[in-house]
Image (cartoon, rainbow, N blue to C red):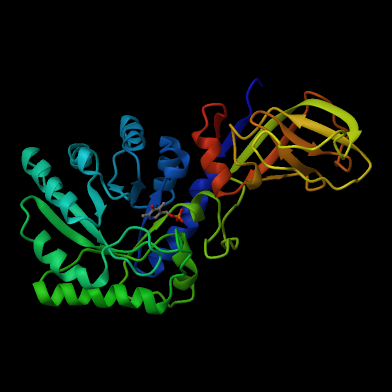
Length: 356
Ligand SMILES: *Cc1c(COP(=O)(O)O)cnc(C)c1O
């Protein structure tokens, strides 16, 4: 094993998707499975679809191309507000895109005319989290303009919460979304096909039966891949949290002091480290570092092992209390959080291995 690897259990992903899809079905909500954290891994998209998601949500063109190249034929939603310089790609690759800038939508319209296609858009509304979204008072005027544009179909409205500002979905803020949808429908005498009420952070409200009834769509990433809702990372019932496991190899194992010797300056990343004196300890160095993963986001499966820190290529661990005797060449395994998964899947130095 020259590189660390991440195993991807497709069966667990499928089962997680099924469990969440079934809950959503009971509430007449269709879900889009979000694969961006896996860089659009086609096998993951396929597992989600097998588990019952109705579409795939992505943020990057390369990821969408990867999925399509494997013959996966499902509706594709572009979740990131498109950039003007890439409207041709958007119309070509996505069935629907999420938008918050009229200037971009006008260009999408031109590209759609050119490609002789109708491009669906969903307008994102700002409800407090301060990531993308049209301010509420600007929504009606924006819709008025959008409805004039050729080859653009307004499919619906939506919002994104618990992302930048950490704002939790409530009956109140999602109630506002529904009110806005009603207002659009009556003012322009149209029917909105999609009212998209958020991401994995909306599941708790849904399960409590408090998601406003008009909401008929969610985009779910983390709850499917890691089995957690995202308002405070509670384990989601009926899902596995270990579909992704990182393995790394011990490259040095020695008994050394717990405190460095000499004058302490800065570490490799410009921080001044501090150490607690725990006497001598068994220290294992692994072949994984900050170029592979977000160290703060990995947890050893053997919980008696403690992570001490990492440089670009080395993970330092205290294995004094490890469950079994260890030696160089042994493999240690780790669970990941979202940040660590994102880094590991994006790093070219981590092998990806799917299991069924
Ligand atoms: C990433 C993303 C999602 C998925 O979020 P999770 O918390 O992983 O469920 C949903 N919507 C948008 C717009 C996104 O960018």
